[in-house]
Length: 67
Image 1 (cartoon, rainbow, N blue to C red):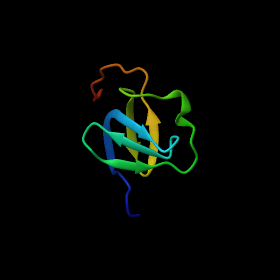
Image 2 (cartoon, helix red, strand yellow):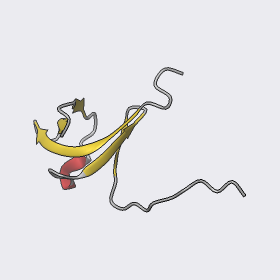
Image 3 (cartoon, helix red, strand yellow):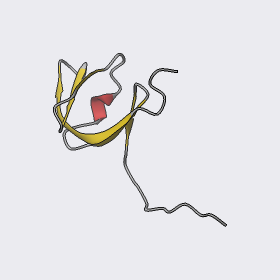
């Protein structure tokens, strides 16, 4: 159960070592096991949720409906 609900959102600041390490704009460093980020670059907005990195391409504003 460790890590459930852990998340971080930020922009990629730098990609190093042929895509093996991603550095976010807050300075946090993330090791990537399988480099599928070849098409990602600096300033790509990502979310890290429970040790998975997701590329955020589009978003919409929402509010919870209590109906």
